[in-house]
Every structure is written in C-alpha cells, then in structure tokens.
Length: 313
Image 1: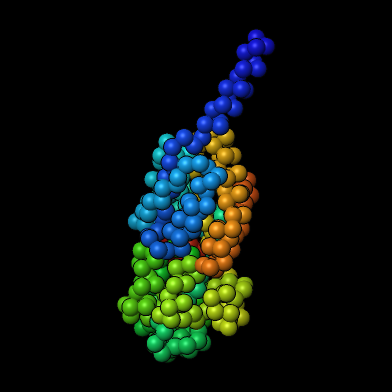
Image 2 (image 1 turned 90 degrees about the vertical axis):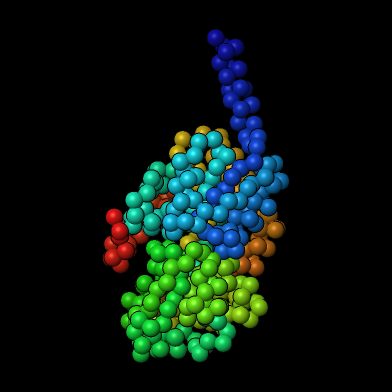
C-alpha cells in the first residue's frame, strides 16, 4: 500500500511534465493585423523557448470575436486549443447575445498579458486636427460624421457610445471586422475610427493617420501632445485586456504550466519591445487575479450594456 501511494504522485509528475507534446492552437477573436493579432503573434514568438512547442495563431473574427472564444471553449480541455480573450468578448458580448459561455465560471482564466486603451484617429488630410473640432462638427451635423468600430459591443464601440452621451453628439457608427475600421478611416470609407494603439501605429508612423483623442488616464506615447478625452472633460478611461483562457475542465497542471510560461514571456525583451512599440501596457495577472477582474468586469459591463440599450437577447 505504501509503495502504491508513493508511485502515484510520481506518475502524475511524469504526466504533468509531458505537456505540451505538440503545437498549441491559439484562436484570435479579431482579424490579421489588429491589436489582438499582433499581441498573439508576439506572445507566440516569445513563448517558444518556454513551452518548447510552437503556438499556431488562428484568426476567427466572426460574430464580433465571439466565434473564436466559443470554438476554443468548446474544444477538448487538454491545453491544445486556447483563446485570446478581451474585455468585449469575455465580459460584454455574453450579455448582448446568446453564447455558449458566460462569466469566468464557464471557462478557465489562465493569465493576463496586457492592458490596452483605445484611440480615436482620422486620416492625415481630414479637416479636423483636434478632438474638439471633430466634436463641434458632430454637434453641428448630428448623425452625419461616421466612426468605424471593430464590431458592435466591443470596447471601442462602448467608448464611442459613452462619448456620444457625455459630449452630447450623435455619430453614425459603422461596424467592421477588426482591424478594417482603421483602413476604412484612412481610405475615406468612414470619417474616423476607434482602435487600440497597436492597430494604428503603422498608419501613424507612415503619416497616413493622426490621433485626435485617447480613451485613457494617460496620453499615448504615439502622440504625447494629444490630450486624453478625460482632459477634455469626458471621463472615458476603460480599456481592454489580452488574456489567455482555456475550456472548463482543463487540468490544473496544464493551467500551471501555461501560467508559468506566460509569466516568463511578459518579461522577455522581445515582448517588452513589442509592448513599447505598440502602446500596450504589460499587465500580467495569474489565474486567480484574472478571474476576480473578469467577474467584476462581467458584472459592471452587463449593467452598461443594459443602460446603453445594446442587448439583443
């Protein structure tokens, strides 16, 4: 009996050390080139030396990003299919539409990588050079100016909805598959777009777009002379996150392995450089802290969705 008791933990340790034995698929809720896509690819590259297996990034932007989350959470809970979750896909959309998942008790929060705050951009030759000019024009011409967002009920969309309420303006909100709203603004399909800094950094550096405002407590490093909307009197500072989630039932040793790898990845020079270059804030949290944050956001955003009248259920 004693021999059997001592061998069982040993066999578990051997099993735990065997993960991962093959490539891991990471489903992304938005399109190629967007903030989530860039984050996922930077994470996958930096994770190679910590997980010893490649991470295959797969973009599934359909249904405002919820398909990627739903598909990942419906997969076998063996650690080989994960999702990159955001505030919108994890805590907003479940209140808006019927989904096979809900709050963080319906999946396994693994770890948070970054926090991101959106910006408002227009093309370089637009007639507005400040947020004040854009808002004054919107007040003078209600429902005329168009703003592109990466799907309805995304954080970018909620930022726009709150700006309309606080600034007493009315935009024509146009939904795109992320990050196509950025191309839409630069190409003239819409007057402006809201996106995470990573999705607009190349357009800013190539002088194809300019920042008008920042939905954050702090100004953006992309344009430190541009004020935040809070500075302009509109306290809209909530942003999104990039977090790894797994199906409910994923073994604890797999979650631990992934979490430890992620903790090391966010300290990698290449990942730090990515964050610096894209305006993302490294903001690591382990499973318990991430679960607490998601529970609170799930509760608060459910109320916000109801107040804004965005529920479709």
